[in-house]
Image 1: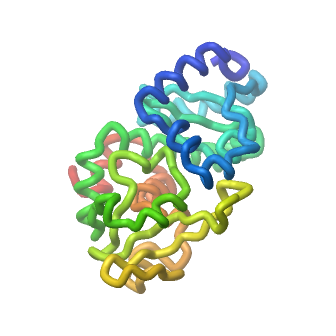
Image 2: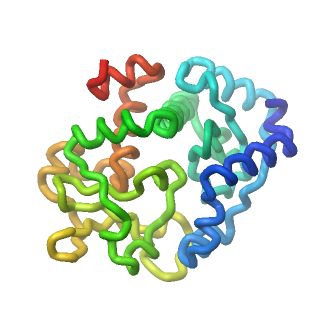
Length: 246
């Protein structure tokens, strides 16, 4: 990385990612997802050399990122949300770098590193998620009108976007309108597979496990990534121990 990224290198990496995950296509053909991203410029961007050196210095302290490529995107990319793309890309809107303290940026990098670990080890993470009390749900069990209103998340769209807590309770990140102005224009609703009813609050047992207002409750892999990043986990061995597989 030199003063940010070479635009050609970034475009090539993003084109390879798109061929694998089809994320941008999925967003483009979804009216609410396209609307929420209409002011988002998903393009390479430059940050200063000191910021690049700071970013790379922090990344070097996270062994989980040893095989990752870190791309700097326009500050508006994904409304400023950091994310990962297939197979090993960490995509950081420039604003995430320039507006973050070292501690906050390190936490973001750990979180995204864990998402890359999830991408590389889906069987392990699916097993860990099931042990937590979640059950993978086929998309067809979620009514189409709700699926079409869900915010698409590149970190959780594959292999299994929908999971039910304690068999029946599925968190859905639903846009609050058909024409959202931002990716933040969502509410997490809980779909009860038994009754077909949407609830505004999770079941009490979920709050007992994750707290009353956990960050990113839309998917168990987000919840677990938040926990692991907060715990300061940076290695494969430590992550496997936390998941109970070592």
